Image 1 (tube, one colour):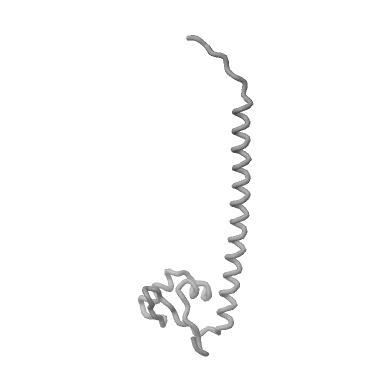
Image 2: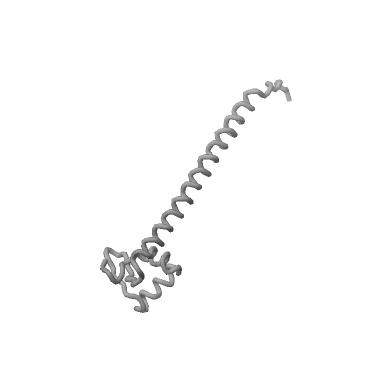
Length: 104
């Protein structure tokens, strides 16, 4: 990193520029963006203000954290509901009257 810009992963660059990952990959193949490759991972150079870029990435991280929290809550609610149904199923079978034997 230096004063003029920052290296971003493809996903980070897509979030900052609000474009798709496939568009970025096409730009890399055609040589329209400055990039480097490290251990098979591509990084794209952006001249965008570093502070602004960090703010965008921070807001994206916060959004993902909120979504993650919401999904965890939903999973916990579903687990509780499943436990209630399983308890109800067990108690329903135990409370059924015994059926008489029928000879055929």
